[in-house]
Amino acid sequence: MMIYDIAIIGAGASGLMCASMLNNSKQKVVLLESSSSCANKIMISGGAKCNITNRYMDISKFLCDEHFVQKSLYKFDHKDMLNFLKENQIYPMLNEKIVKGSYFCKNSKQVVDMFLRLTTNIKKELNFKVLDITYKDNIFDIVSKNHTIKAVKVVVASGGKSFETLGSSDIAYDIAKKFGHKIITTAPALVGWTVQKEQFWFKSLSGLSLDVKIKINNKTIYGSMLFTHKGCSGPAVLNASLYWTKGFVTIDFAPNQNSHLPRRFRQIAKKEGIDLKNYTFAPAGNFGYTKAEITKGGVDTNQIDEETFQSKLQKNLFFIGELLDVSGQLGGYNLQWAINNGFICGKFLKN
Image (spheres, rainbow, N blue to C red):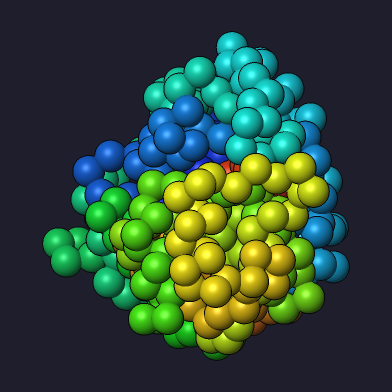
């Protein structure tokens, strides 16, 4: 049976970037993907316009171990990303309508096509659902339902739990735990909130959006809030959800002195006796992983080498991308982080 030098589990942003770094390597590399196609999440990113990076790539935009991310983030920053894309005839444009500093591509397909072109020499095994990994005599056995792949080194890049319909699963966390890694509690993030019965008046405003200020766990988030038939969503709520655990949040519905509140909102707020500047409530929950853009929590970065993304507990095992306990706000931060990880890990493996 063939023994690959490197097996990469997951053909998302981080896995594809890692594979692209190895495309012209003499090493035998295989890319394993559980679904029938690569880069499914990239394809829907940014409303299919691929919000790929942000010009304000700052550590404050991440929920993470700052030391770990700080050391990695600037090895392939937003300028490197834009140069990389330019070399591949992709020219993202600034679009700050929703999030300041956001770069969007013409469409997501051009990014997917780029990665497929940059990995033409990499063997791809699609519909390969990893069930287990074992390690013996310096070789990893990666087990699926139908067959087993053997490799000297394994890169786990299979993402988090968000977008279950695109094939996400717990396998990355299962692998990490099997080799002794700690998993920081995972939860849906960049996701809307459901409400208690005291906030059912939100539902009567479904479709209405307001510019608000949300205070949550010593964080202040500005942006647009959208009332929905389930509760609330919109950029401000999605970013706030990154920092929310069960508990209270406070919303200022008129953060600007010149705020013009819609008549419909003013009527209901008056009827409900709402404090417009200091409305405090506890969300009932969130919309779940099916609606969440990312998963927060994940593999504890204290057990990962920030120079290579290799496990500190198991040699030749690497973890990259969303599965790590690093979560960014809306605006291209998470895609930048995933591709950054693939670049750093792939560069190390290439050399």
